Image (cartoon, rainbow, N blue to C red; front, side, top):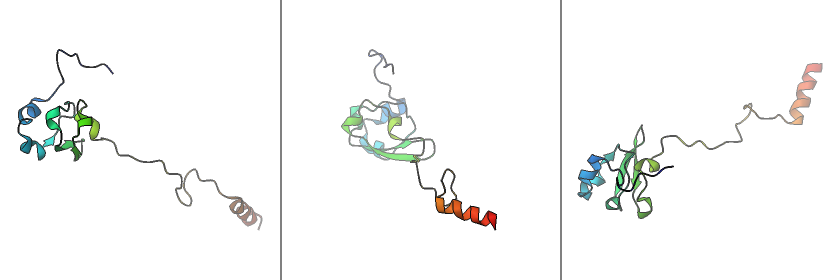
Length: 108
């Protein structure tokens, strides 16, 4: 992905730019600007980042500096792949005993 030019600097929303000096107000704030970059002033703060539905709590560490706030508040729900869907589930193969049982019923 192309990087922002160096002479422009990293993007920080005007709202965050004003409050980044006052750390106490940042602790209890919700951040709607997912496109803003995380600067070193935000380290060791816990912020609420809006994901489109609800705010998600995120602890800012040194490793997150330079990334965007939106990278740490997922907007889509994680649904792991499930193999066992239960009896009668779609895609489940019936066993040989079930097949023989069905054939017995047909011939009676």
